[in-house]
Image (cartoon, rainbow, N blue to C red):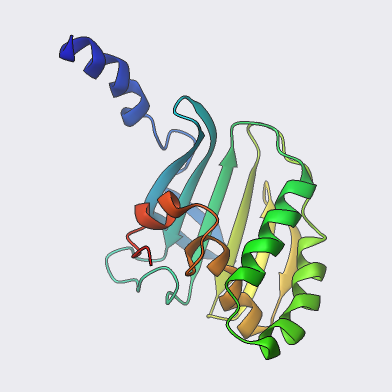
Length: 179
């Protein structure tokens, strides 16, 4: 019985990052895949493959401190733009530590998130941070939004990797402590 269970689970493990390339080129920079994670609804329904990319995985800082990074969200299901906007706003605001940051960053958040579009199975979003300041949102290599506000750029990744992440298992998979 254990052998049959192992055979059933093996394809899920062996192909967990089947949709994520080993490397990505962004802004004339090459990024290699450092970590990946399969986002599931329940145990069986795969929603997305998520990859963290850096110029050199062995030399890069942890994801929140890394100056140059790409997070790719390759979707296996259709997802509405409203879902992205609402969940990103909720978890961005949950991770802010001061009212000053709220007043300063909320307008930038709403402007940036307004550019999310519906996504279909097989499509992907890339969040790209360059030089610890510029944050860009791409959909299938098409630029949707850019922010050059360093504070906003750094806080945006707290949606997934802050003290109150949208998905605890994603944060844990990328080797970040769950508080």
